[in-house]
Every structure is written in structure tokens, then in C-alpha cells.
Image 1 (cartoon, rainbow, N blue to C red):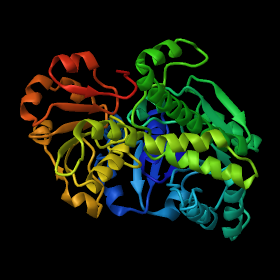
Image 2: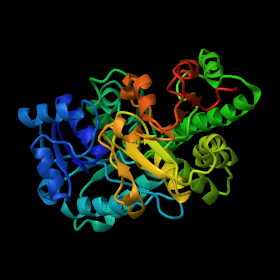
Image 3: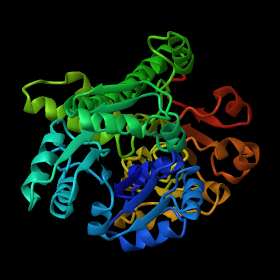
Image 4: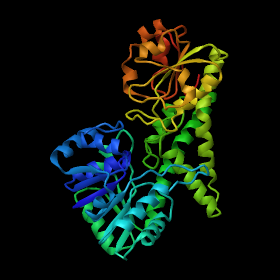
Amino acid sequence: MNILVIGTGYVGSTTAMVFAELGCNVTGLDTDEHKIQQLKQGALHFYEPGLEDLLKKHVHSGRIRFTTNKEAAIQGNDVIFICVGTPSRLDGNADLRYVKQVAEDIGQMMGEYKLIITKSTVPVGTQEQITSWVQAAQEKPYPFDVASNPEFLREGKAVEDALNPDRIILGSNSKRATKLLESLYKSVKCPIVITTPRTAELIKYASNAFLATKISYMNELARLCDEMDINVMEVADGMGLDPRIGSSFLQAGIGYGGSCFPKDVSALILAAKQNNVQLEILDKVIHVNQTQYAYLLDKARERLGSFANKKLAVLGLAFKPDTDDTREAPALRVIERLLNEQAHVTVYDPVAKLPNYPPYDVLSVCADVEEAMLDADAVILCTEWPVFKTINWTDMKRLMHQPNLFDGRNMFDAQDMNAMGYYYQGIGYGD
């Protein structure tokens, strides 16, 4: 089957590579010529474990190719996945300008039946809007269907999730489209849910909002654990054994970030308000998440006093390990607060880079952990990169001005760090 994937960002690149792996002939379309040239050479423009290996494999096999030629790509493929960005607008809703442009391009350039499938995360009702945009752009009334097939990819685990999904959601109002969608996934072994496009669109938002809720619930519970001298990690272990709860997303820390949870929770709240419903639980989810990083900094301030003229080493920039994504990363909130309080800040991340943002110009971006921790008054750990576990923390202590470690991801054992001579503070460890 010949498939066109429009948009070669995180979702689009993963979608393209996985369908090539499943035996389809895939074309990746993007307006960014530099990005396309990189992909043609087998180089990803972002970090995702295992994905570049698939890219090299299928560029070499010929199963995947990349182009900026919209007309040829649209006319040459009957199945089209929309994988463009849907960033948040100032009002919290999803910005659909790129989705609309793609829909209009398809309408103008198609010459026969097309199945248009939305992979991008979009508000409920977008399938209907895409249908209208395509129809309005058509010069001749060629037949087409629009379906919803939301992605459920974890950054850092995208290849695993795409090749071994826990479920596939197919939202379609057309028997022809549904049959074609089922054939696309015929070799994938997992439950397939066939529903309406509106339901499929809501399933995506509802799933991410629920996972964000679990995170904020545990973060709020961690604050109680600190006051009651209880280890929140032991609480999470006990809770997670209940299959109705599960162990995932019960890790307390400094909050969630990334390109999905923050914008999807906000978009769902806004959609509810537009339908005269107040999602009060999700309002609280956002509030807890936006204040959780400050909770750890309050602990650090109690220990150090004023941050002014103190040297603070921030370890980890990405919102989670195994990605270079810093969008909405708690580390950036930590850094901005430290800078506002006149601290000297050094940063280290094994993969992620600081955004190009003027306030960050005063930071010392370090080549390794040793450089970041040299003469530091404290370390604030913001991302649980596995490499941080391999550090010789006894040697690192000798480099520091004061051996204080504030662990925003509860990565280390408090007793072990105390035994090495550190003042250690996690989140929800109790006394």
C-alpha cells in the first residue's frame, strides 16, 4: 500500500518509519527543505532511540522517500496521514492552521478518491472541519473520507509503542474508510477500537488528561507525605499493586512537561467550558503541576537561604529521559526562578539543548557533570537520565562547595546519599 505522511516531526517521522517497517511504501512530505534533505540522508532532526536506525534501514531499502513536492505526493498516494503540529493558542485551544492548510492542499490537488487520516492531536469535531475544508478547496467533487487515528506514543519509547501498541483507535463514519484502515493494521496484534471520529478525538485528550491527573495526584500526595514523615515511593508501590490503579505514572517529582500533557489538558478544559461544563479536577491538575517545581525550590531555599550569589547546578533539561524535548520542561521553570533570584546557574544534559531564549544567555552550559558541579552550593536534579546513576557521587562531593542534592525525580536513595555525606532532599520522602 502507498502511504503519504504529511509532516515529518516526531509523530510524522515515527508514523512513516513504522508503516515502512510493516511493508508499505511511504512518502514523507514536508515544506522544510533542510529537514527533508536530512531525512533523505538517513539523519533525524530530533532525538528518539531506535528511530534513526529504522530511517536508515528504509531509506536504504527504498520503502521510504521524502519530498517537498505537494502535488506529486498527494496525487501519487491514496492514503494520507496528517501529522502536522497543533500548538496551543493563547486561549488554550489547539491551533489548527497547519491542519487547515493541509486539508486545502489535498482538496486542490487530489484527482481521485483519498482516505485522509488525522494523526495529529486535534479538538473534538476537527474531522468535520477537515471535511469542510477539503470540500471547499476542491475544483471537482472527487470522493474522499476523513478518519481519526490518534497516536499514543511516549517520547523515548516511540518505536516500541508504534510497533507494539496497546490499542489502536479508528474513528470513521465510512465503511469504505474503516475497511481500508483495518487493512493498514492487519499485521498488528492488539485490540482495535472502531468508533466515531468525535469519540476517537476525545479518547486521545481524555487519555492524556487522565495520565496527567495521576501525576499531579501523586505530587500533591507527596507534599502530605513530607509532613507526615512517610515515604511516597512506598505508598506508590503499595497502590500500584492494585490492578485497578496500576503502577505507571505514580512517581512523584517536579511535574510533567513535554508537547502533549500541558496542551492537551488545557485544550480539554477549554472544550468543556465551550460546552458549559467545568472540569474542576483538571483545573487542579494544572495548578499542582505549575507549582510543584517551586515546592522543591522552597526546600532548597530553606537549606541554603537566599539563592543570590549561590552556584546551583541543574542536571537535566529534557522533560523526561530519552528525549531532547524541552517543551514545558520543569527544568526550565527551575532555571528561570533561580535566575530571577540572582543565582549563578550551570546546566548539563546528555542530549537536550537549551532553547534559544535571551535570559538563558547568562547560563553556563557544561560539557559534563563534573564541570557543572564544580564549586556548586547545590545540585538540583530535574531529569532522571540513567547516566546520572553511574556518576561517582563520592568523587563529585569533593568538587562541590556544599554537598547538597535536591532530587526532583526521587532518583536516589536518601540513606545512600546521606551516608556519602550529602544533604539529600527528594519529594515526599518524609523526614
